[in-house]
Image 1 (cartoon, rainbow, N blue to C red):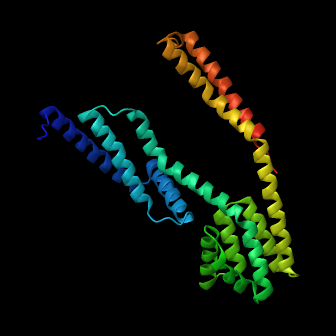
Image 2 (image 1 turned 60 degrees about the vertical axis):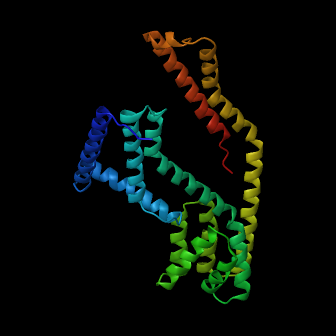
Image 3 (image 1 turned 45 degrees about the vertical axis):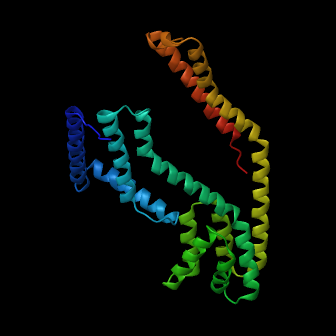
Length: 289
């Protein structure tokens, strides 16, 4: 079957290609200058590269940006020249913010997994220090029995020590790299024990027990507040479901709110109350142990 492309579609595709080339050239010029776009571009690519390194993922920000531009211009080209793309106005914003949001979620999941493994790591280090002379050697000895992502972080600590860093400085770098309050507390106990001296294995065992108890309490709090979180989701979604149901029963039921100044005022007040309720409910459910 032959594919016939009308001259109008060919002209549209050609115009889109020219626009793409122009935007790309303008972007190149802006990136190599010193202006707001340059700083914003550098900040975005730096965030992507930094997050990829922290997640121990391969790839680079340039690859991500290329895919973003390809998706955006591809959707626009198909929508303008070939056929209407459903929800194209949602696909483009998703392509713009999607990678950053996904990397942030993966970063959050990694930190949660690290916090879940802290007590096991501290206890393993305490047991290793009972048999291995020297904290640095004890830390290297526990690497094979650790699980990712803790194993990846400790392997980086060991590599930093091999290139000249001290154990204390490597642990401080690990703490700043992870950015977790629970990990900061655990590593602070290790650092204080290394500087002050004393029976460090016993101190680490006590620290591991304390972290284990804090994790248990956090689990209890999550269980007790699960019903409240479910109600928060209902509060967030219910207005849209009600509006959709009323509009499905009687099409144009809410048109009066979009055709007058009073209607816009009512919508603004309703949205303000809805957002305020979500913020207050979220604040109530945020329990700090």
